[in-house]
Image 1: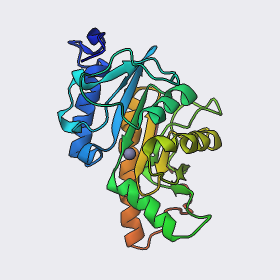
Image 2: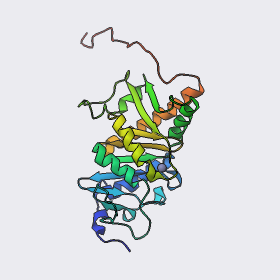
Image 3: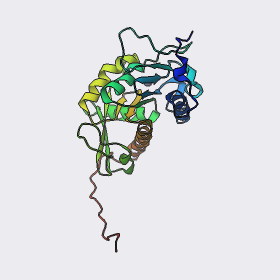
Image 4: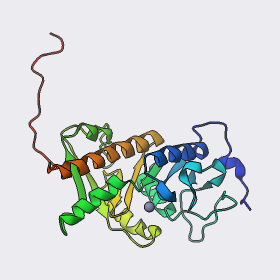
Length: 249
Ligand SMILES: [Zn+2]
């Protein structure tokens, strides 16, 4: 039995969260980000949060499969709207952390092999060197916003360093919550947290920003894995190349 309030997940608008989450997850499935029911996405729309259930085939998900509720998690959870089958996802408290702590509008969780591989590569470098992914001097870094704490607007520049904290995996996904929140506090300008041997959580102030940053990050993780194979370091010192001619000439 559904909990009622089914109108919350019924809309003809393709941009409604109940329609957008299934269409985004179907696209993410083709990228290998949400294989075998792992990973997912959640959207906050005003006072409502839309969440995928546990164990759903992400490429086959329907709007009627979604949960909907407010962003604050009470101790005993009764959802405003829940699907007739399925259980809440263990990712739920992690998505809610992005909404309540970071003011995010959308949070995406992938099990991308490239995200997992960069955490494994760093793990091989030993304790103390394995807690942060860093890369600079790559054009795609411009796909990331500067972050909240400095009141800075706009995105990172080509020569800026992108830093993503890494937390250790836990046996149960919901137990990651305190470590994810700790990483959010330690890296107040970050829009993503890697989970060792597991994947990545990426959020944004809009669905478009979360999606774009997730794509840029996966590109950078893929590149980093290939750079590692070729013996090319992720961090480099490159002198800025300045234009020698004025465009007005
Ligand atoms: Zn996961």
